[in-house]
Image 1: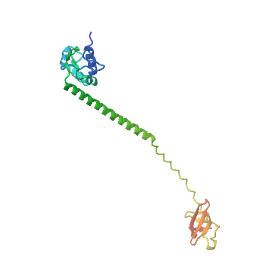
Image 2: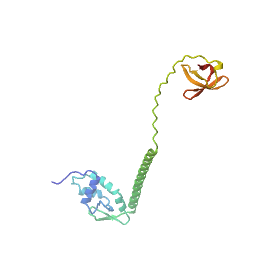
Image 3: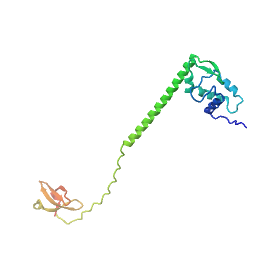
Image 4: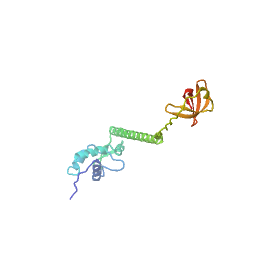
Length: 211
């Protein structure tokens, strides 16, 4: 039983008619210019063929005649062919000019699309390279947990007398919540510079000194 499964797309239709009419259609190399009215001839010859419809034939012919292979073959002095490869009139100048213009426009569109895609690819590569080169922001160090400040044990003291404020004397500095051990290192008119047990120095009023 003959396989009557319908062809699915224009590519399959072109392959099919090239097989049926090899003197007219070709799948490789430069295509031959077709006879004017070739669609009617093709539709008539395939009218009983259940594998392909007229709509498919028309779409396939449109794709075939707009291909670069076909447009390249439309030249002055070249003869058109019918389904059996017989000569069917020479190409006219206006048809040749139209084919050349169509070919140029098609190539220009392809070139523009390729350039657009190339630019897009270049931008993507540049963006990736930039992202790769940009150092990542350093992680913020975790805040150190503050150790609880040791409370200064209260000490029973009394305020220094004026004659007790002398350089080198070990005293206590009243810090409000307690006293801190220190040594007098400098005496000014109203202030006294002391050095704490941890080595830090500070200026305090004489009234804050205790023994």
